[in-house]
Image (cartoon, rainbow, N blue to C red):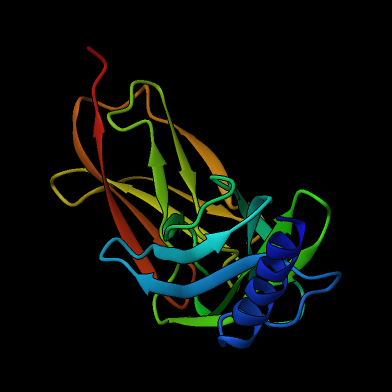
Length: 211
């Protein structure tokens, strides 16, 4: 049984890293056979990231890593492995805040014994700014605005009522990517939050309801 198990680990590591889905391991050999790694832009401007393992043994977790230059990487989410499996397992996650321009993605695979390996790199090009998050919506007294990326320069925030009138306008530093706007003094109704960074403009609907 020991010989059969050792042979399976050896073959699995070879198939996994020669199939084109993996680069070479950074330490040891990972007993994982990867048969798919994909990135897709969703209709809501998020990046769907998925990968499928055909077989896996003593796999601990998967770190989804992101870069904007292909050199400096950061982990955006860690997905726990289902453990040992001899049947295909598909993992999925989302990057809710892709950058404008080029986004690089890869998955780092970790085993329980400390071995590490990487998938190939996938590239997604974004021609529009990252998604802006507005919460809570409806708002009672405060609305928070979170930019999907650091803008190229200082940016302006405008609150526009349903008659098209700007009721408040504020300017923020490019490094202020999350701000809070008091709305307690404005009447109930539907508004538009407009964000302008000089290169692009985005609008989000907002409801103010003090009831």
